[in-house]
Image (cartoon, rainbow, N blue to C red; front, top):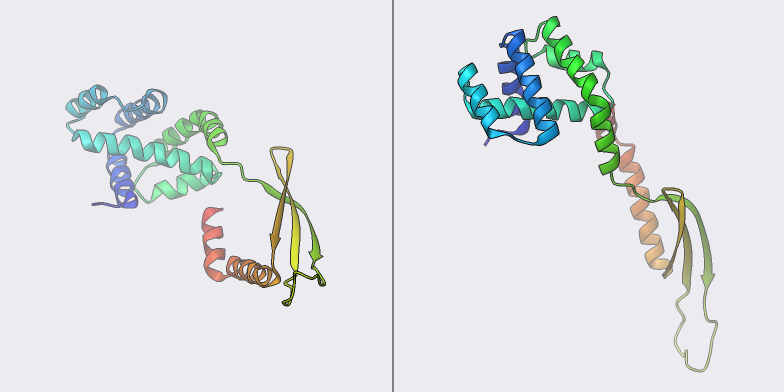
Length: 198
């Protein structure tokens, strides 16, 4: 089974070999796919007209959609999109057609991406208190201190408070885990990923 990257590459190499009018047809098919979902009768007619396998037609349409969505997600400029598509053999005219299509679809895609994006709560403030019972008749053994944490989070302008209780041993474990995550976040591997996504 081919990976998404391989299918994307094969689809765009095939698209680059087509005439300008055929590329316009593919962009119209992609627009219809974005608006109405898959339409097998349209793909069948296009396959007969272009003498290309129907699966390849569907693959090209989905690859154009994927390119548009990923370009919106990563906020790529027109120049960056052109540079990434040039390697597949597109000439300047074909690239301009694809960029114009992308620019027309961009507001629609950004609207969908923003409405479907998960919104996670953001850290606002942390308060803590150290508690322990010094002694009582029922506590004959050594007491274990308790740390109470009040974590204030904010999501879509609404504040929420969470109260957590833990013992010092678990608190040290949480601290160590968070420190390890911070160190990993500053590693070369993560920096490379960040650079690729910008």
